[in-house]
Image (cartoon, rainbow, N blue to C red):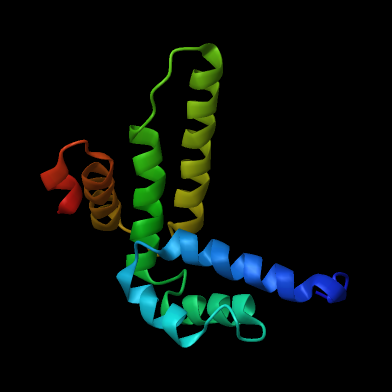
Amino acid sequence: MALYANDSDVLETWLYRRLQTLWHVCTDALVIFSKHRACTELCGQKVWEALLTAFPLNHKRMQTVLLAREFSSLMAWDGHSKADVDRHFSNVSDTLEMLTFLGRNLDITDVFKAVILATLQSSKTKALTKA
């Protein structure tokens, strides 16, 4: 922010909007965005801090959701070229790194929950997606 002092408000607003886009499906986060608006000073920083407080990365539910998102991207793979295969296995490596990072708190039940959640999220069946 010190480097971009003249444009810090633009960066804050951009960060705020990006976080809002990423979190729009999480209804629990709506309270945070209604409390901190884009027009407030340091809006991006305040929202980021509030999100990390409300949804800490070492919380089991948050870890399960993050892992499910990784699994979901793996299950949604659709490609035919060598580049597609390389990209897919790069994603597998990323998921393994995330498992290593999160693995201290997760047990097999948590991983299974993440797989179930990913299956529901990546399903093309409307009833499963809503579930």
